[in-house]
Length: 120
Image (cartoon, rainbow, N blue to C red):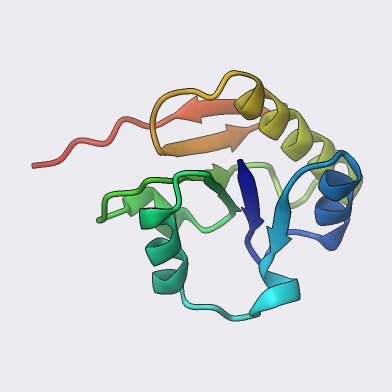
């Protein structure tokens, strides 16, 4: 599995994940300002990709997603170190027992909640 961090995540999270041996990319270090449509295209074809974002627009996916989207609901008012611990805990749980589905929320204290997607 490969993790893609949206540009609204601190670089400290990227460095912590790398130090733990994770295959991780950060949009800030690659293509800042990349359109969501480009990320969606990548998610549509890359089943190994896990995209971590704060953008709730991704909860309204209108395409078939092969990868996984995790929308963080961790409060931005928390100290950065505390937020990083929540994200790491959530990602560890996600990878330890990859739940079925493609759309998830990461809530405090690092719990992963799957969304059910209903198509009309």
